[in-house]
Image (cartoon, rainbow, N blue to C red):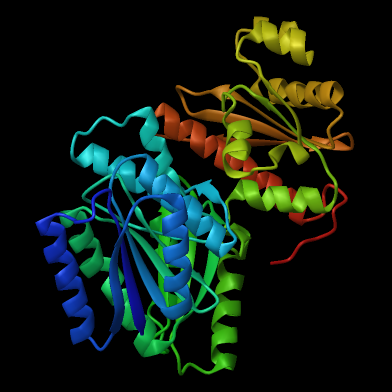
Length: 409
């Protein structure tokens, strides 16, 4: 494999430590039969990086783009990668999980600006960095491989030997084909149990499972030499096993999949939120550039009086000794449809302290009520409630409940 290394550095020289690391990376690649075409230091200027990356991608099979820490430089690098690979930035739940783990393990307070590190190109896989906030990523398209990695000495050396080198050698030796399934509702342990026969298969097909707050991905790496008919049967059998939990066979978020479904059928969506406190609408706007094309309106009504005045929920419901969560969620949904004129509505209500969630999904023809129990911190409960409601919305859209026709993965 032909490899080029681009190191983004504000000065014309990188530190002696980083120079030693780059030298070690080059020599390690050579020793493992890889051809290093170049190792270049480039100024962190958008035009220079873009031109250098163009040339590197034209001449090399794999590019290692190494970036100084800080807020602006990694973000700039990701934007340029999106331009080259025809993708866009989204919030990665895996990058977020890794950053939160790092902060918790090292007692590091996270700042608001650290959220920019959650963002990854939508075609990218997150490369875990256990030693810092700057998470790496891997992008593949049209036979080209690109890694974005921190230039920091300790972080780079760890990630290179733990993740990058094994991937390069595996790609060279086996010509891997990769398939991805995005899931909801399966914990990591449940994935391992449900897919145990696939994980320990006789064809040396690698099955990797990841999960965070209910959202997961199943990555299948098929090495060169496995017959196509065996591959097809393996993938189909695994699809069948986890199909009730699969929402997409592309590396995309729930919000992106819903956007694709609704925009294809010219359907408009509306949210009425209490339990999720506006997170459902925020999830769409943070993941989708053109969210307004399908999101007609959104109501966040925390106070009971607001639910009555804005959405028309009966005030009598709030005077009862015990709140009827289902009836309140139902009336919130009805009110949102009447106020917005949207085709589809999702409402959320419940007791966030107890983790008791009710959400309603429907349209003018009928509204369905769902109950869920969520655990964790307040932030995790809100995220899990959002994930649960969006997944049920996907299921209803895919089964043709909203006049959209059945969608089969």
